[in-house]
Length: 81
Image (tube, rainbow, N blue to C red; front, top):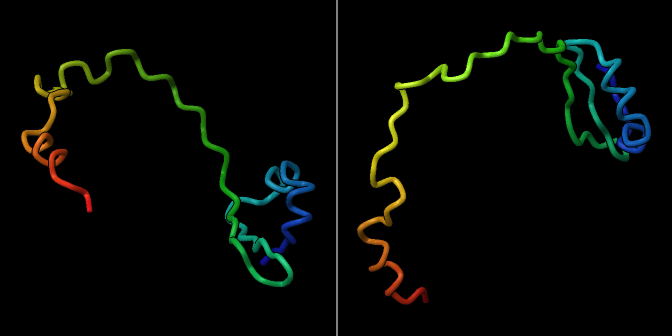
């Protein structure tokens, strides 16, 4: 497994991530202690754009969505401590 010191990573961050092979784990360390495990990923494939209105008619928002909850006023009247 690869290993890189946090100071080296901060100095060469962009170059490091661009050259980390897909699926290859790399431990990020500081003074010999492992801080994180970074795993290289494949670049996402460009997806075709979704048409506008793709979910039209499938999402319903309740008419009282913005109304306060029934017990909200009661909760505000109670002392906190």
